[in-house]
Image 1 (tube, helix red, strand yellow):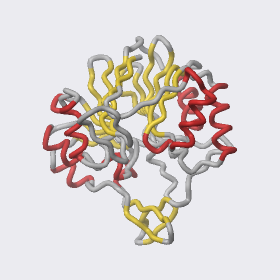
Image 2: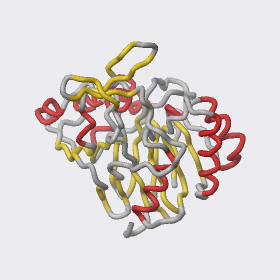
Image 3: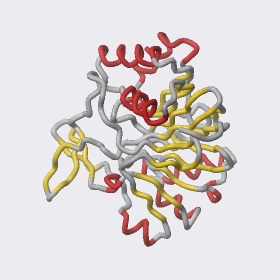
Length: 281
C-alpha cells in the first residue's frame, strides 16, 4: 500500500461500555477516525440517540464528517444512520452490496431480524451517495477498505446462527459484507475492525497480503470472540503475538472472557477502550 505515512486519531463514540460521566453505552460500535485531514465515521452504533448524545458530550461535531464506512449490515453498526442524516444531509457512504439485505439471527429456537433499519432506496432519497464494493477500495493514499475477506485460518469459522433472506427463504449468511479499514502509519498499520465476523486473524492476514506490509502496529474494534472456544481464543492470541501486533484494543463483541485473556497474555500490548476513549497513532 503505497503513499505517505499518516497520523491517526480514533475516538470511540459508541461501545458496550462507558466509564466517564454523562456518556452512554449500548451494544454497538461507532468510531470517529481522523486521518490526513479527513473525518471518517466508521459504523454508526445501534441507536442515533446514543451516537448523537455521545458525540456532543465529547465535543465532536458530526456535521462536518467527510464520509461514512459501514463494516457490515447488522443493526448495532447501522442503527444510527437515520439520526446521522438529520445532522448531515449529503454524505458519501462506503459499504458492501450485501449490507442492506434482510438479516436475521437464530437464538434459542427463535429467529430475530438484525439487519439495517434503513434500505438503499431510503438512503438514496436522503441524499446519500452510495459506494458499494465487494473488492478492496482505496479511500486515500495509505487508507484502504478490505472488501470481502477470504478465509485462510483453520480455526475461525463463520457462525451458522446468522441468516439472510434469499428468494423468500432464510439461508446461512456467510457475512460477505464484513470488511475492515487499514491505515498506513510510521509505526505500521492501524487496523479498524467492526465485528470481525470473518475472523480477526483471517482479517489481519488478508490485510498483510493486500498491503504488502508486515508490520501491524494496532488493532482496534470488535473481534467477535464472546462465544469463542478456549482453543480458538488461545490460537487467536498466539497469532496476535506471531504477527507482532504492538497494541490490541478489543471492543464491542469481543466478550469479557476474551478481553480478560488478552489482558493476561498480551500484557502491555493490551489496552482497554470504552466510550470516550481516544487513541492516537
